[in-house]
Length: 422
Image (cartoon, rainbow, N blue to C red; front, side, top):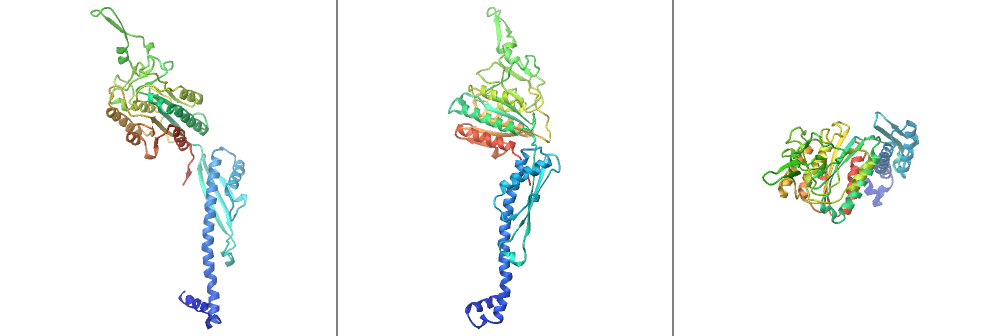
């Protein structure tokens, strides 16, 4: 290299070495140097083309996955259409036969694209073309999903258009997941409206259900006759109950313990405020949308009870029994949305005390393998909700109610998306 530089210097100097051996040495040496520089440029250009091919192939795989199942003929035809539309302008020559699509196992598509890159600079050295190939695997047929929506229905949701925006956002999420379901039952959703209490539809749950604790309700709802000294009080008929529940006895208020004893059963209560009833897991999309429409803001905030009942809706035991047992092909999630700090539960109006029960419930839910998204709308304990989420990325702080739709859409897309395997 040193001798070449010396010769090059002499060549440029215009000295006698411009002729003869030096010129010969230079002309011979310059060929591999230019070739090497050209090869580097071509390598960079080929890599850029390869990246474009990979992007187009990934897009093709995702597009095909949304159409599955397809026959091999349909895969080949649709695959080439998608790939051709996505590829743009390339310096790679690729016939349709260069795209090979296979389904090695049910639920998986393998795509390989192979073309020939024509060197733009280094071709004069004898390299006319060289192959460029990319591949990807796409999963189709997502895991089954059970999702509980624990939605704040307290009086403050009447402010700043929050309830209107929540309804819009929740319906958008439901529509997204409805499209994702490839067969009925792939996606099930429960809706848990809450304030300081929760409420069931008394036309569905019988008054003799063994998981209901009646003692407190019967003590609070009696018909008394006679004077003070001879007063006789008897509980009102249970048919007068309007379906609300307060927190279970501690520590069972933060657990999914089976309701087999008085301490573990769910205490019935006459509703303090108006409240939409809960809807257990279902894929009746009309019923889900109707339940969202039925929500109205009223009452004080008890985030704990909303999260607790969302958890109960995702497990197989009473009070709700619609959930499937845990399985490798089943994911369970809760979306917890609130717009305020805890203000009242069964025992207290002290926010710190209620927060402790919320935090305990969050910990127990996550320990049970259920993932939690949390959404704070304008007000509420940010630290409590951030810590409750399964991951920092699963906590959303909404400063304007109009942002709820984009947040719910983001969560819905995450739950529904198909992932490229690495």
